[in-house]
Length: 529
Figure 1 (cartoon, rainbow, N blue to C red):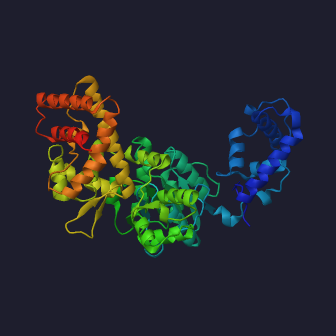
Figure 2 (figure 1 turned 90 degrees about the horizontal axis):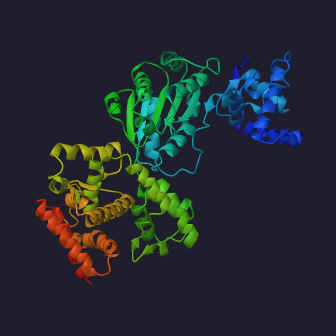
Figure 3 (figure 1 turned 60 degrees about the vertical axis):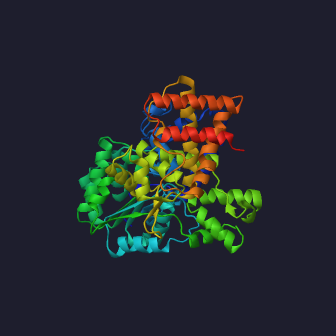
C-alpha cells in the first residue's frame, strides 16, 4: 500500500478522539483551568515527540512545533493534516492512528459538509435524468436551482449515494459562508492530491480533474452570487473552465437562484435543471411515510396546499404535536389551513431579501389577483409603473432565476401563480407595508408617490369579477382597515383621516389612479357590518 501523505479522522475516529480528549483532561485534573490550557499542554506533548532534542517545557503554545489551528483541524476532521502530525496527535492521546484514520475507500470521499442522508420521496424522473447527464452523457457541469427548501440538497445527496462508485474521488463543499475562492481551491487540491499539495492554481486543479474521474458538489452557490468581488470572478473562471475544457470529471452546482452566465454555457456538456415542488403523488407518499393519515380527499387537498419539503416537514411535525398525525381537524370547513409560523416567515423573509423592488411589486400584483393573473391583466395592472419589457424580464426572473413564481400550463392562456404559502406570506407582507405607509401619511401629511397604495389596486376592476373582488375586500381591504382603526378611538376619526389623504392625493394630481380608489375602499370597508 502506498504511503499516505496526509490523514483525516473517520466518523468513528472522531468519537475516539473525543473520548480520549476527555480522559486527557481528567488525567491533568486541576492544572486545567480553561480549554486553552489543555491545548497548550497537548501541543507541548506533541512537540516533544516531533522534535525530541528541544526543551518544550516552558514554551508557549504560539511557539510549539505545531499550531493550535492544526490541532483544531485534527479534532474537527473536515480537513486533512500531514500524516506525521496526525500520528503524533494520536500518540499523545494514546490511540492507534490506524483505528482513528479513515480508510483508503473513505479517503476517496469527503461528504463531511454534505447534509446527512434522509428519507427520500419521489423525484424518480429527476434522479434518472441527472444520472443520465452525469454517467451516460459525461456532463462536465450540471446546475440545479430552485426555491429554498425545495429539496435540492436532499435530491443531490440521494443522487450522490447512487452514483458514488462511478467516480474515483468525490467531495461535497458548502459555500454557505461565502468562503474566499482560494480556500475552496486549496481544499479541492488537498483532497484530489491526497495531501501531497497544500496550494495550487486553477490550472493545476484542472489537471487533477483530467487525470481522475472526480465529482465535485458545491452547495449554496447563491451565496457566491451575492459577493460581487474578485472572489466571485475567480469562482466563475473556475466554473467556465470546468464547462469548456476537456476532462473526465463533473461539477454539480446547487443554488436558490440561477445566474445569467450559466445559460450562456449550456450545451453538450453543460445542463441546468430547475428543481420543482413535489407532485401530489410524492406529497402523499411523504405524508404516509411520516405517519399522517386522513381520507383520500383530505390527503389530496393537503397535497395541493403544501409541496415544499422544508415547509412540509414543519407542518407535519405541528400536526403530530396537535392532532397526533390526523389531518382531518387541520382541514377547516373543507379548506386546508395555510400555516405561517415564525420560522417559515423568517425562511421566506430571507428569500424576499434577494429580490428587487420591481420583483416584489410584481409578486404583489399576482397575489392581489389571487392566482388568476393572465398576462394582459398584469400588463394592465402595471402599465403606469413598468414598461412592457420590464414586465417581461421581471416575470422571467421570478420564474427562472428566483423560482418564486410559476405558471399554470393546464390553462390557456397561461395563468401566473404563487405557491399557496408564498401567496399567504406575500399577502400579509403587502397588508403590513400598506398599513405602515398609510399610517406614515397620517403622521406627517406627506405622500411620496411610490407608496404601495398608489402603485397597486386593492380591488381590481379589469376585468370585472365580483367573486374575486369580494375576496380582495375580505383578504386585503378589511385587514388594512382593521389595523388602521386600532390607532383611533372611533370609526369616524379614521374616516376623517382617510378623507384628508384623499385631499392630499388631489393636491398631488393622483386622484385618478389606484390611490383614491384604495382609500375610498378603506372608507367603505369601515361602514360595512
